[in-house]
Amino acid sequence: MRLLFLAVLRQHTGNAVTAQRVRDHLEAAGHVCILKDAFDFENPSEISNFIKAENLEAAVALHLYRGGRLLRGNGIPFGIIFGGTDLNEDVNQGDKNKVMGKVLEEARFAVAFTESMKEMAQRQWPHAKDKIYVQSQGIATVPNTAFNWNTFLQSSEINQSADNLHMFLLICGLRQVKDPLYLVDAFSEWHQEEPNVYMVIVGPEAMDLEVPVLARNIPGNSAVVKHEVTGLLFSDPQEFVHLAKRLVSDPALEKKIVANGREYVRKYHSWQEERQTYRQLVRTLERNTGD
Image 1 (tube, one colour):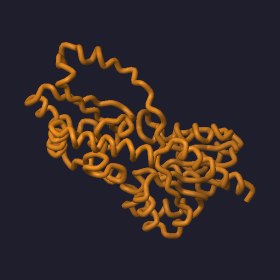
Image 2 (image 1 turned 135 degrees about the horizontal axis):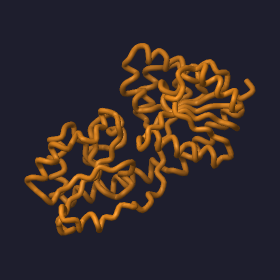
Image 3 (image 1 turned 120 degrees about the vertical axis):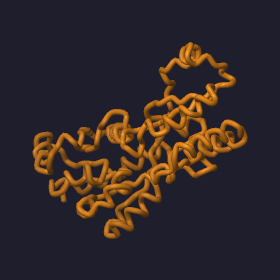
Image 4 (image 1 turned 60 degrees about the vertical axis):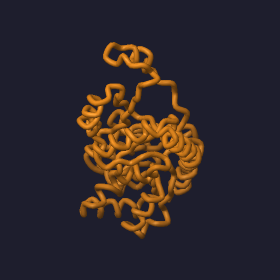
C-alpha cells in the first residue's frame, strides 16, 4: 500500500524519533510510507489534495488532534497513534476534545503506548474503546555514541578522576514540561558544593543504557518509571538533587533500579513486537481500503 504518515517532526523530539521508527516498521513490511509534518498542512482539504496527487491508499497519524483531525472526511482508511499531548493536555480543552472524539469515530484503530493511556482514552471516548490497542514504544539496540568521553573527561574544566566522577545525563524534549533547563539552577548549586558532579544535556536515549533513571513526575514518565523500582521520580529541582545525592551514596539502590529498569525494557519494549503490531494493524487498513 501507499501510506501517508502524519506527525509533528521537529528534530530530536520524541515525536520525530517515534515516527521514524514506525515508518521503518511499515516500510519493512513492503509498504510505501510517505512521512509528512502535520504542521505543513492547514486543513483537511490540503491533505485531500496531497492524497490525490500522491495516489495514497491509507494513512496513519501520530497525535489524535494534531494529525488525526486533518484526516477526517478524506475517504481513505486511517489509524491513529496517541501522543502524550492528546491525553495530558489537549483532552482538557473542550473544542479539541470534541474534535478528537470525532476523529476516533472514523479511525480504524488507535494505539496507546501504555495501559494508563488506554484507560484515559476509554474514559474520555467510550464509543472507541474496542478499537484502542496498547503497544509500548520499542527500543532497538543502542548504537555506540560518537561522543568522545575520554576527551571530555580529560578537559581542564573537568579534571576529575573517573572513579570519583558522577555524571547526570538529561534526556529532554522541547515542550515546557520537558524544559531542558528545568534543573540547571538547582544542579549548579549542588555542583558548587560538590565539584565532582556534572550534568550533560543530550538528545533521545535512557533506561536501556543500564544506568539509573531519574525522571520528572509527570503522567508520561510515571506510566513507565515506577518510583524506587525501575527509577526515581522527582517533582521539583530540589527533590531531584535530594534523590540524586541518595543515589550517589546508595550503591544498592542504584544496582536495584538498574536491574529492574533493564528487565522492564526487555519485557515491555520489544522492538520486534512493536514492528509486528504495526504490521498487523496496517493490514486492517488494507483489507478495508475498498469500503
